[in-house]
Length: 382
Image (cartoon, rainbow, N blue to C red; front, side):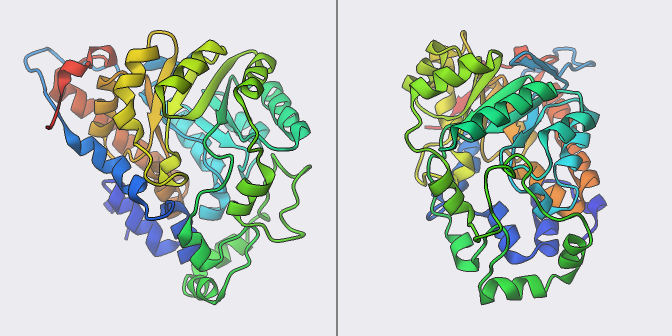
């Protein structure tokens, strides 16, 4: 399959599946438990219909938004995700460059495979650093200090991952960092030699944000073990309030799902929240961010920037979220499969396809700017 023949999310997913060894593909593709939330994240968008207006004069369309003080050329951003150089040797370098090219935001994860400083050198555009709250408070302080020194303007604290989700696809293949695969996993790597050659002929895999504090090599550590043993389940609102004060800037919580928690985020001084169930990878059976969006926007949308992620595969999904009051929408697998399939050209093509879908969709909706999208443009099915 050729990149030029990829026209949507499913095409990129098929191309990535052809290229990646099974354990890595399933790490990206999988969710927790029975993957109910994973599937529901996308199907939730099908429960409402767009109601377009016509004859509105939409020759020119402005898709720009400002979220957490960052000006984006379009209302989607590349959510910070882990381990990207496992998927393609360019990893976050490709994503940073592609996001800069289209003028949107991207992020580096605590489990990122290039340093946040290098990512900042690649792009001086909107960037977030995604922080996991570790038991090692010194590690938390070091990463925040590094992000501030690098010129990152937004800190995004993930709050739904104090322990690892039950990702059974990874358990079946023995997926760990570094690799310690069972027989089924080894077989999957053997039948995809091109990936192995590519992996072996580029710089060694590393996790620069953690290298001074976490040893992944001495004893093999699964991603599930990392979440369970390294992250701090005692994290409380008092801890988060202290982080927000210490950061003293744009501070966002990712993984908020309840109205009560959204209000608490406002009270402690957060400037943004991302409604998210972690792509269906943590608590299976949890409600989708899209289903929670309207009530949380109604509760706090006038006091804090509300974003969402999870299951977004089309420009029309984004338009529905914006119509309910989301300031911007995060993409995850939407850009990870193109990254795995083709590196930077893949991410660029995916983001350009999204840009075209958004522009086309807004014209067909009769909207020339994002603020013209409202709940009046939607009807939910009974």
